[in-house]
Length: 428
Image (cartoon, rainbow, N blue to C red):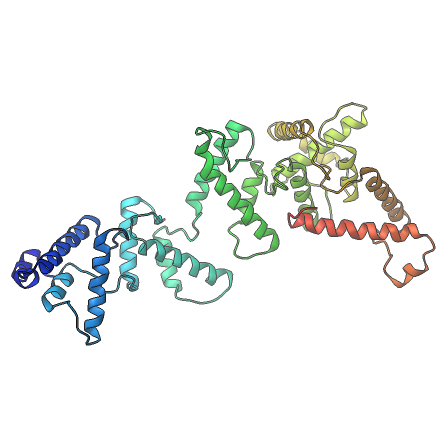
C-alpha cells in the first residue's frame, strides 16, 4: 500500500472536473476514514457508503470480464492502497485468522468473540466454524480441516471449544448459586414480574439450555454439551433437570430418577452408601427418606414428604428401609443438615400446593386405589413365582384359568411403557 500523501498525484484523475467524480472522491475519503477508525470495511447495511462500496466491487467484476466499467485504473489503485477487499467474504489464510484472534485475546483477555450488531462478524463466524469442526471431529470421528496441529494451536491460546466453555460455565454456576442463596431454589423463571428480577434473564436462558443438554445426555446424543461431571455439579446444587407440564414441583421424581440410575449401574441395588461421592445429594436423600419412614413407623402423624404412594413405588424397585450397621455408623459422622433442610422445604412447598391434576407425586397416573391394588397383586405374584415378569402373552398364559393374572400382566406392561416415557421426560 502507498502512503495517502502519494494519492494526491491521483486526485486530479480521480476527482476530475465533473460533479460525479467529485462525489466518488468524497465517498473514497469517507471510506478511508471509516477504515482508519474501525480497522475493517464491514459497513452498516443502512449506510449509503455500503451501497457505494458494493458498486465498486460490481464495477471491478465487470472490468475483470472485459465489460465497460466506471472503475478507472486510478480509482482501482486508490482503493487498493487502503486495503479495500474486492471480495468481502473471501476466506483469509489460517495464520491471518490466528493473528486476528490473538489481537482480540490481547485486548479482551479471552477468545470468545461475541456476535454483536455493528461489529465485524467474520472473526466471530470463523470462531464458531472452528467449534463446529471440533464437534464433528470428536463426536462423529470425522477428520476435517481442523487438524491436530491447528487444534493444539488454538488450545494453547485458551480457546474455548464450546460457546458455554469452562469459564462461562463457572461464571453461570456462580450466578446460579447466588440465585439460590436469594430465592432458595434453582428454578430461575424465564418471565419476570419486575425490572429488578430481570437481571436473572440471561441465567434463566442458560438454565433452560442445560435442561435441553441433559435430555440429549439421557438419550445418548453425542452432540450434548452436558458431561457427567457437569450434571453432578448441578445435581449437588439441587438443580431441577425436568420441569414437567410447567409444574416445578418435581424434585421427588428427579431423585427417584437418580435412584434408578444408581440401581442400573450398581448390581441392581438401591442401597446407596452414606459416603457415596458419585452423588452426595442422592446419598443424603436416601438417608432422608429412611428417616421419614422411621418416623411414620413410630406412629408420628403428618409426616410430610413420604406418602403411601412413595412407599409403594420405592418398595416396588427394591428399596430397603434399613441399612447395614456399618453404614449407619458412617452416616452418624456425615453432616447432611443442609440437604435435609432443602428436602424439607421442597416437601413443604409441594404439600402446600394444590395437587397436579391426573398425577401423584410419585410420577404415576391415578386411580390411586386401583394402582395400589395392582401393586399388591404384583407383590403376591413375585412371592409365589420369584419374578415380576408376569406371563400373560406367552403360550403358557393361554392356559391360565384366572383372568386376573392376565389383567395384572397388562398392568405391568403399562407401567413399563409409562417408565420409558418418564425416562424421556415425556408426559407420563
